Image 1 (spheres, rainbow, N blue to C red):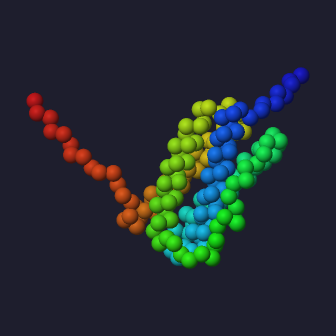
Image 2: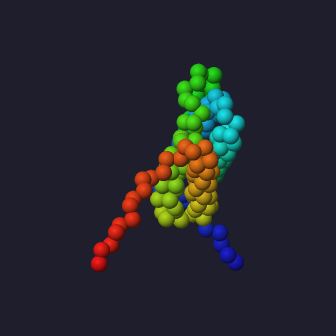
Image 3: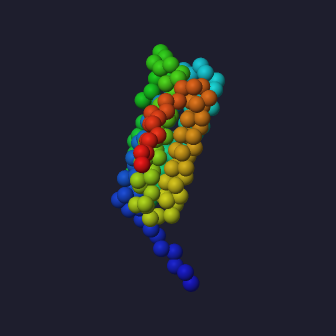
Length: 162
C-alpha cells in the first residue's frame, strides 16, 4: 500500500508565490484601468488576455495558501485604482507596458523554476513562464505590425583579412 506523503511549501515556494501574487494583483488593477481608458480596438484583446492570466494566477495562489493554512497576501484590489480617473496614458503605452511585464515574468519565473520541488507549484511556475512568453510574442507581433517595435541595433559584418 502506497502512503501519500504531504509535501509542505518550501520557503522558496512561499516567497515565489507571494511575489507572484503581489505582482499579479498590481497588474490586475493596472490593466483594469487600461481597459477602462483604451480606445484602440486592436490593443484591447492584448490587455484582456493578460488581465485574465493575472486573475488566474492570484486565484490559484490564494487557493494554495488557503489549503496550506498560510495567510493569503492582502495584495492590491479594486480600492487601489480609480477606474474613472482621467486618462493618463496614450494607447500606444499599453503594449510597451505589457512587453516589459512579460520580460519581468520570463526573468522571475525562469529564475524560480529550478528552485521549486513541489509538483503543483512547478506546474504553476512553468505555465506562468509559458504565458509570459506568449504575452511577449503577441505584443512583439502587434508592435511589429504597427511599425513600433524598437529593434536592437544592427552590427556590421566583420571583414576578415587573410
